[in-house]
Length: 217
Image 1 (cartoon, rainbow, N blue to C red):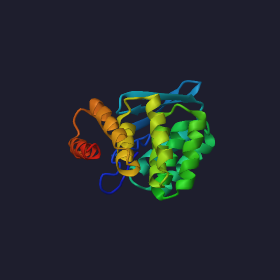
Image 2: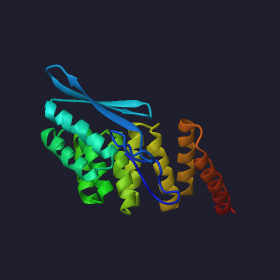
Image 3: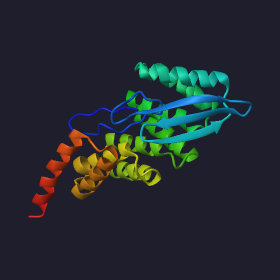
Image 4: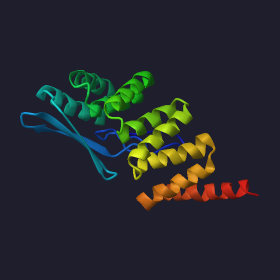
């Protein structure tokens, strides 16, 4: 999943379940592997160090459509990718990975209403899906629903506290959009314990520390 914004706005936050976004977003890849007789198992592997595995019966054509959709999204052929993902979602409505990727793609096209619908449906079937929560947070931030964005990022972190994309997204949200400087500092610090080196965030933290000192005078 990817992200784009001006200035400091989240440059980390999305994690296209298959990996085409790349900055705020992410660095996740999702693959589907054939499972004998029982159907197909979809493993979503994330650079943040955890794997979400879903099992469902999926027709070979749907699996092929999903793989092709991921290629199209990587090529930024969003409309074509969306069309294929919609077919996969129709064929396997309970599977969250295609819905999340569809939500990300729709957000990228500007159809935030449809994007939100699919992300919420993904959470209905997988309430503890950290990526879905994080993606919903990005969508809420982009549409000005900052408190909802905060709740979504926090929900992602409740599931996986070391999910550093969501951690940085939350820090930026608190810093630039909510004016909650202590929340921003706490989450930048937590982010750095996982990432260790991020020169950009280090600069932001130095600036934030000065602003925090000013508020205490």
